[in-house]
Length: 204
Image (cartoon, rainbow, N blue to C red):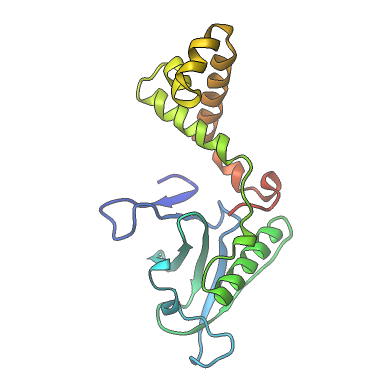
């Protein structure tokens, strides 16, 4: 377990893909309090509505609630009360300015989820750097498995490109930059991706 996230895999009664972030590490995780209300309350929130779309982790006197569709996710940390006891009204203790925009975006996503029954696509714009991040991971995995930089380039850019351009050094430089960026991410640089100022309040 690292300083930023709870990561669960086989052996724990949760899907292997589930990652629960610590609120202090990810500003898009919204802290909330759950207070019981009647089912017909206008602001009633009922976890049973979301079925397998939601996962709840209990521990440390808190509940960590993760909604996800495979591509997008939304996480709440319930600091008081329980969303498992039936309909509740959610209360959000917001304060400060530095992370306010991230919290407001998560609130908008939660509102859309409750209104639509799914995570609103319009509030999850495509990440323009996702393609490069994927290539960095592939390069890093290849290097960790013992592949040479030339072999990595062949997988990422094609064998023909390597045959024609490898000696010029261009592809070699690109692979080296991918590996350097990946190592920076692995050493903790990934946390910057969660910073609203770094991401323009588009993350989560």
